[in-house]
Length: 343
Image (cartoon, rainbow, N blue to C red; front, side, top):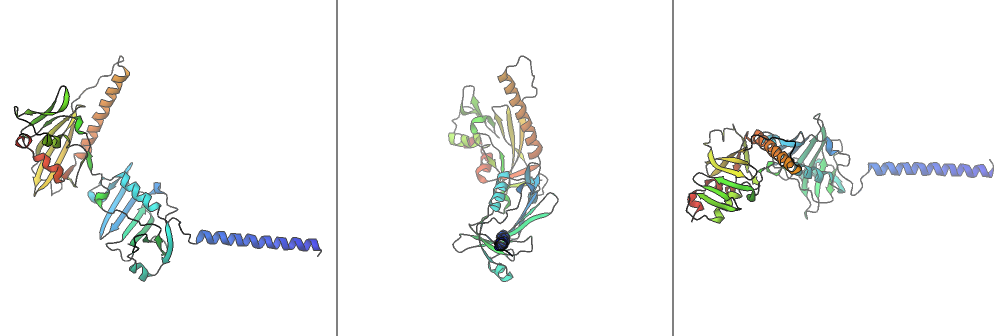
């Protein structure tokens, strides 16, 4: 072999070795652990159809329905999309600091096995009911810098320490859409109670005592009523035919008229120092006529009226099936009488 061919052979061999070494490095880097890598780097959140959270012997099941989720354990009541999105995002962003081990004794020591009060199991399933991911969050480090985590859905049982502390809410209250209705006190035009009527004058301004007449109104007390619909939230929710609430003696406590000709009737029942309500919306506009002569602002007003009428209809279609328990802060407002509102 001449010198040139010998050199070409050596170069070819060197290139082959370099190629093999590069391939081995790439494979080992892809398959091995890298600090900072994501725990759920291949999960597509758009494919999640159900989330099951288990903690402290309790299970919470969030199931996708239409554009949102429902809470199965609360008879399918609506869930807060923002709370679910935040929980999924936090899990997707889990970065890993280091591998810890994979023994059963270590899983027990780090609060992963068995599932206990301090650990949380999360399961994601797709629309076909197939399990996509199942993982457990165990104890935190002594300083709280990280959390021990282990995948449960594959053969790999490696326990990792996360790069940052992971906290995940697992209670129904954390995910229920607890806000029933939200209207500013300035939108309230009239309030009719058991033995009083508050109304705003034609010139606007604050609510005044219309009945009983001739008595001075306590502003602090009237403001409680005018703000009743402002971000009204429940503590607990029941189906209307639930034995716990089905026989309660509900009676109208408030009728609240709003500026847009809509309003709400609040029916109330008290039992064992607890406050229960049913809400029914109404809309006083029964007919809307569209004319060719209507100006843009008139058409917009009529469109807003139609939209509000549809909102009230949808409100009743959904909330008519439920009874809500209110906190004392809101429930006590429904027991106010004229003697409480006047000097």
